[in-house]
Image (cartoon, rainbow, N blue to C red; front, side):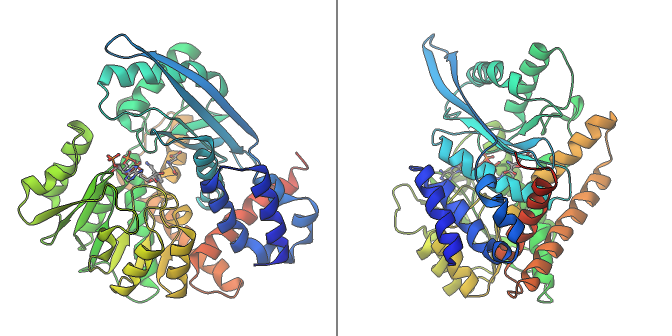
Length: 453
Ligand code: NDP
Ligand code: 2IT
């Protein structure tokens, strides 16, 4: 690593103790863009890097609500407004007990470069709360969302900050959040994305992250003159991103043999077909059950519990051609990455944000895998959120095939600019380098043009 990057990182580390995920994300970007910083004196002189790692604003607030037993619950809510150089703050809300400021800063930081890659005018933010939706009734989730939005509403708006979903925040939660905003603000406006189709949502937004990731993977495979047809694929997670990744993979003729949740994974050697995917969607979106039930239902599947597995996850030892990690950060460590490489996987495309540790990513780059980093591969979700904002501004709804066409074009464009940047900087096919450089330079130039601030 260059001395310049060493110094920058030492500074970020000193200023952000106890935020390992944020430091991990910053280190990845800093390492990738080092040659850009070395070459561009104005970026150094105007301290673009030191400015881009500092959120423009961080809001932290108390969220109090009453559970079904009448007990008062207190949670902590946040919104990290990271960067608005190229558009209003944009990014999801995460409701999960693990949420803390460091995790949201890592996610907001990733969002800066991801949103820049989409070609759309989107700044970056992320928010959420340490609320655990698991085991809560619909009314408890509603009361929590109402309490959360009763503070957040004063900080957001269609031209200011437009939140969306992430882990633990899907259509149900966006509905409760939007209803509360609309009543408090007395405006019907596109302040959230991922809305219901009857009240301003966009066709294809639920599908967008998963479909986009598969489009990106297809582009990577195309550089080696091959396709997804007949490929065996590992998918992790069983939420929004995993479900629509599986759907598109099936459509393109791939064989998906796994999915997972935070308790374990299922491996189905016969492959997950459309009927089995409907079962997963019903299980996870309506009944809100555990993925173990999949193996109880389908005899070709086996269930492997992964709670307490610390050194490696056996899911990533299964034989496959492609892997689509779509659950959460750092779900693939160095051992898992080595196992994937050893078992002959040639493509890893990240549906989740930062699902691979720094050491794991290093293995993939060394082995010259087709390795699509999340900020490129999963950008389809926020891209269609940007299209939902455009439709709301026009007061129109576009046809399904039009939105899907835009999504496809955007994913191809992200692939092209990332690949081109990797070639310009002498590491063709290194999408980590390419995506970071392309995203960074767009935001950095906007910051330069808009003056110090
Ligand atoms: P969901 O809440 O719909 O699903 C999350 C899935 O990941 C569930 O299967 C969940 O299991 C599993 N999971 C969550 N936390 C953990 C954990 N700590 N350990 C193991 N498994 C876990 O979320 P999404 O599908 O929306 O998000 C998945 C990933 O994709 C996240 O990294 C998110 O940031 C990223 N992403 C999402 C986008 C979107 O548009 N929704 C866009 C771009 C990226 P369980 O049911 O047990 O909790
Ligand atoms: O990580 C992400 O890009 C998201 N959770 C989606 C953000 C959005 O605004 O649609």
